Figure 1 (cartoon, protein in one colour):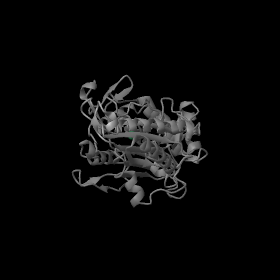
Figure 2 (cartoon, rainbow, N blue to C red):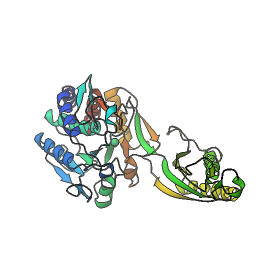
Figure 3 (spheres, rainbow, N blue to C red):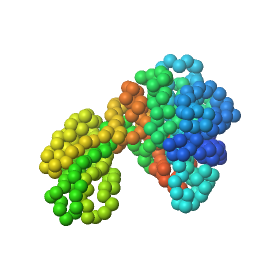
Figure 4 (cartoon, protein in one colour):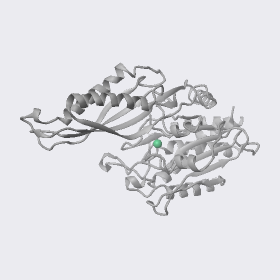
Length: 412
Ligand SMILES: [Zn+2]
């Protein structure tokens, strides 16, 4: 049996260990202060202790100061597992997962205690077991399978456990990218925090994302005399339709990497205006969620929105303005990048499926890395139960993903 076969065999009998680590991690709710929690420190320290008990001692910490949590710090942890020749020259393999979880939500929707993992019918149930502990635990067990088989990775492995993924990453990967020079251009970076049930989607790109809040000021008046006022809601409706129409008239490009393959400009949240039916509203606020193909810069879209606004203002005798609530422009990882090819090969070997590069609507931490010129991919084989009640993960997916990571670590 070669080392890879031994490691795979080791993983096939690792269910108990996986359930143990999943249970330990879910028992410590690592919830962001924005969501009423105390952050990730206790979970991070428990994890570092657990890794030590398994012989993984090369740990670095890059904590981000955050006075809102007890202890004042948000943890970012790197566990390094040296490669065969012990040098860090050449590409390193990074697997980045996040420590934080979202709150459990409505407890009555849970069949079990979200913070006490249940193992049943080949699945673990609990908050965080999939998002992102499937990836976190899988990456650790990949390492343990190699060490436990008496071997070492072919290249240096860096397991990165970050804080604050669920609420914007300012104290997690963004903090690391701003304050440290951890990554190199030739590093292989995998973020196991997204994917489909077959494991066939290797996410390499995101649409540009822009959230807009549109404020309209008209003139309030009695419902029986609408001509005396200027209906802010009506003007906003007109704007919503006209901007949405730009999908068909201006931003018409298609890119098969994405699903849907076009730019989408969707009116979404609507704030309350007048409390009663018989008043023409003088104020209106609503929002757009815009997912823009990378061939269109966000500024170009905002320019077109402004043009439409000026038309609507003139026709409805209102004034309109917008606030950009969120904007992210993200570079893509090239479809031919080594990380894409190596990962597709390992997925084929373990799962027997052809994984293909895809683009998504936006919103993963991959964008921060790509914008620094780092070729990262987001991949996992998962059931997509994240953030839901009764979140669960299949043990066979955790073991399978761990085999994919182990195959990459062994480098053949
Ligand atoms: Zn996640």
